[in-house]
Amino acid sequence: MGGTDMILIAATAIACAIVGGVFFAFSSFVMRALTRMPPGQGLAAFQSINIVVINPVFMTALFGTGIACAAWSLYAVMQWQGKASACLIGASLTYLLGTIVVTMVCNVPLNDALAAINPASSNSASLWAEYARQWTAWNHVRTISGIAAAALFLIAISLSSF
Image (tube, rainbow, N blue to C red; front, side, top):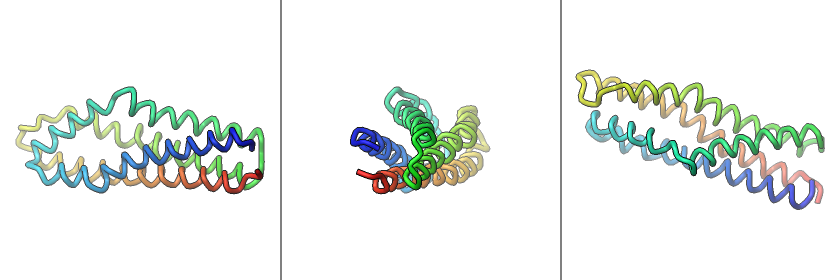
């Protein structure tokens, strides 16, 4: 790997860490704060978050990083360099499976179901409590995956010959 490759791998590591950090914030304090609110208010606040999160900045960070990870996997296979390439593939798969796939298969369907709930309904408290529990559990996976992918990308750099 050349110097430019290492800079681009480091940039991908930073992007993975940023996405993991966003999810870390939700796992470590945002969801706790929202679940301490009256259920209808916490539910309504999260419904609003689910709308505003769909924006070019966050979507580029989340999915652009996924594209970079896919590209690094292909690069690693085509330019095989032993352990460094294995780390690139591991980092990429960790991000793609633990962040992108979990988002699309677990968190987004939960968000879609939450969007249909009326915060003032009689059963909103129990629905919100169950949603928050499930969503946060899957969010922990996304947090760990983003941070682990960043670490693996950095390990790949350290294993590369300069």
